[in-house]
Length: 509
Image (cartoon, rainbow, N blue to C red; front, side):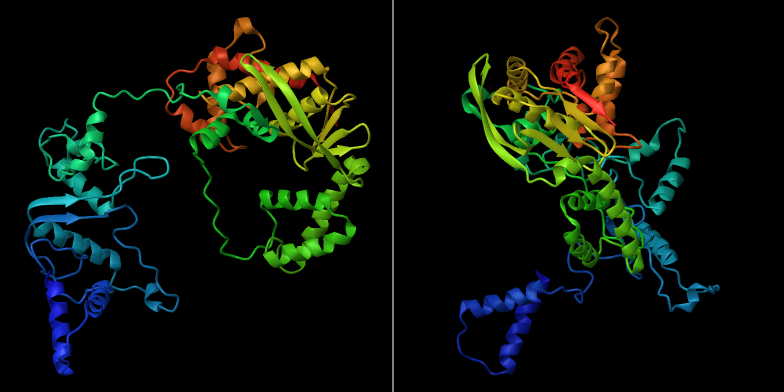
């Protein structure tokens, strides 16, 4: 209010100085006030009222009944100061030289001495990414240690009593509970009904049935959606049913120039594009990559380009019979009988070669389960819809997998299993592992001696990952809120989904 009054006074003085006596429209006054209020009034006096907000500066150790220190996080206070390269004092420090950390320690002591009745210190106590406990500023830790050492009853956990964890949301019930702590009770009445609804509420398992009749909504299923579901039913449920998308944090841009192509993802992307190019297009392709900054600088770019080209040509020798041809596609449609009636599957099947049509796909990388699943599903669709189906081929960097022809009734029956799981997934999450399939099936091959602890460990590995693979964020979200899994049902579904697939595969090196 004091600042607003000063702005009005200054505006009136300006009008008097220019001898302006005509009436002003409200828009002019509003524009002047907006411009003044948008400015940062740092020049305004320190004691502006009963509540004062300020930074920690020397000579402000004026006594107050309550002193609140905010943002006392580890690594942020005492403040870090990067010395300039031309500052020679940093290399030859002597007694009396100013140090920002020492200044901040003194300011912290001044703030402590200014508090007459209450001292409130806050810091971020939990990580926003994984909720791990975080330490406060080293000054706050030293203050806590000193207080704990000088309090009676050494067996009591004084630190836990001194440090209070506040609710992370405005509607947390902790904010409305009565206690003897200061600054803890909320008076925001708009959140009280939601807080009351949480009273006595027990957190349920994540996997809960939902009220949705997919049999009436999904009579026609696009085949690509079915493929996405079978490749990762947990991710499909989150993204398509709940509208939740978990994404990894993007890597920051490198601070220095690259003299080596050591990013595996970039190498994979280059290999994938080079496989589709002929010799006349490679020079223009590498020129674009160099301009983008993907290839290293200088002559290193030529060395790595030759290396990538040699690796790609070696892989193309494995698919030489197909890479020189122009593939075609066809539209396939199939009526799949289910327990609630017929469901229509429809979609385009690409990468078809020769007559009769043979589907041949490749990826210049190690064969993964997602590659098998996609190739297997399209192979089933061809076997179920074409009069003369042939073997399908998937070529990886390490091996070639050939899918034998499946009789038409068996192909339809297998697609029926996937379709019914797809529709059931609208009402309840289908927690079925789709990575490490071979190892999991070997683990449950003997039904009379299944080690359920090992099964759960395999599922946990999918969520958390290991030294060679990242964890699945969608599985992490499910398992963190799951007390007990129906492993018998999971094992049954894994066998129904993937045993026929592995039986139909013949590997060639």
